[in-house]
Length: 397
Image 1 (cartoon, rainbow, N blue to C red):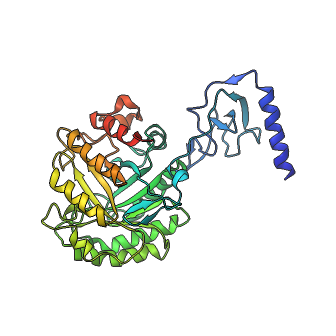
Image 2: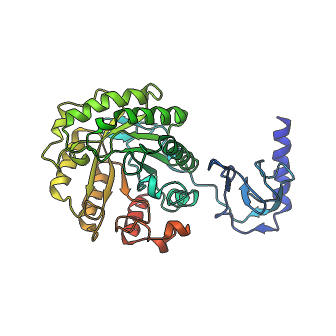
Image 3: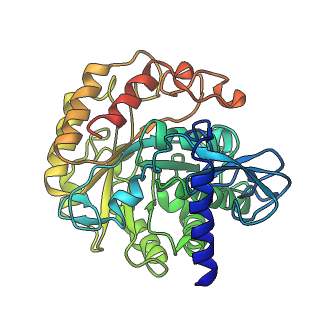
């Protein structure tokens, strides 16, 4: 108690002493405890000589390696009071808190409808941790783009999880930690695609979700998507798979929001002759369940839009993947078709994540090729789709 009082008094004295000598703006300086350096495991937990840190209105610089609170040890020197330093902006999790599904929409901690808007990563094996997903890029997404959520796309095949399960589990955990520090929601995406029947990867899915949920059961900002794009199977096969995987999550996190992919590459069957009524007539009997829908605006027009509109009238829907291009994420952008989807999702509070937050060569990647390698994530590096999607995320803030 006395120690805290003395510290508060010392800060007041410091603020008065430096009132005539302001440091430069602290807007681009990390605010404690958002450390500047990572340890061998990739966890940001310290500063080194020369690193600056903003804490309680004062700018400090590290004299040597330290993980002490700025201003409490000789490891820090005081540079001055931050000039016109605004309080840190609260991110999505601070605004909305623990989410739940109420009726046909996602709701915040006060049971008020909420629409989350954000980005999906590309495959973590190609564009993941320390590539396109870094502390800096996620900070740009959370603060510059004012996004609510990042979707972590963990491919099962194609060089993904099945090759080195522990490596990819560790990567997802590290990315969850980074995103959580930035007050983002995290959508953990089990990105099965080929084979299209999610049951083919059932045991791997159980292992992955058990390990991830166990490690992060103390967090309330995580959403789990258990099947990215089921295809070549009917709804019953997906239903049976969900009955196996959802209890693995629920035994560790009873209230987590869980998303389930739908048939026809998550289109409620629009892409394979099925219907949203297949789900309506055989819904999963769990609380806090949502069903996913994917679209690519240049390929999927009125028929798919109508399927989304009708399904979201009677089912809780989360659009976990969409683009302004064709269904391969390539080709010209169709912003008119995409705008019709955006308007529909806004009107019905349908949350979404856009594909994708990478510098892939395709038009659907928001960054120009080479941006991630250079560590540049400003607007000068955005492709046409990147500029447009960023504005859609920031709209109505």
